[in-house]
Length: 175
Image 1 (tube, rainbow, N blue to C red):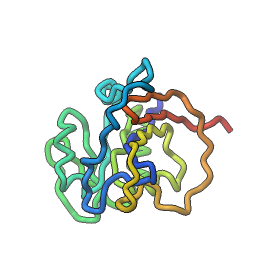
Image 2: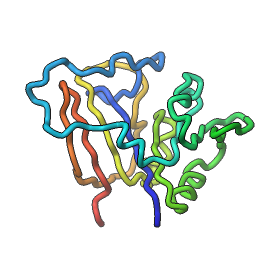
Image 3: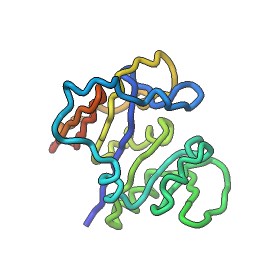
Image 4: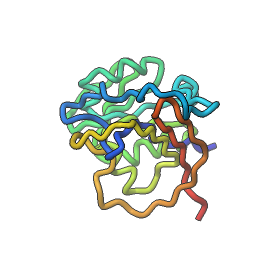
C-alpha cells in the first residue's frame, strides 16, 4: 500500500507562508464565528495519520522539529549533518528520498518552506493539498508557490471555516 505526500500549510490571502523574518504570529482568525462550519479542521487528528514530517533547514533552525518528536522528521539541507534521534538530514534529490518513503506506505507531511516544497510541486507528486487561508494580506514575505509550476488539476474534498480561516482539502483530479 502506498502512502501519501500531503502539503498542509497556512497562507495569507496573497500567498505567503511567513513574513520576511519567518514570523507567523499573523496566523490567526478574525474572531467572527458567524460563518463557521459545523465540521472543524482537526490538526491533531491529521497528525495521527502522519508518519514522516519534511521541513527545510530554516524551519529546523526555528525549532519546529521539536513539535514532532514522535514522528520521523526529515530536514532538507545543503549542509552535511549527522542524523540523531528521529531527525534525518537529507541532501540532493529530496523528492526521490520522500517518494521512497511513500512507496513504503508512509504518509508524509510537507511542512515547509517554499523552497523545500517547490520541487514536489514541479514534479507533481503531492497527493493532497490542505491549505488554510488566513484573512490577512501580508504584502510581502515568504511565498508558498515559487512560480513556473505545471498545471495541476485538483478536486475539493472538504472545507472548513473557523473564525474567518478557510481550510480547503484538495486531492489530485483523476486524469
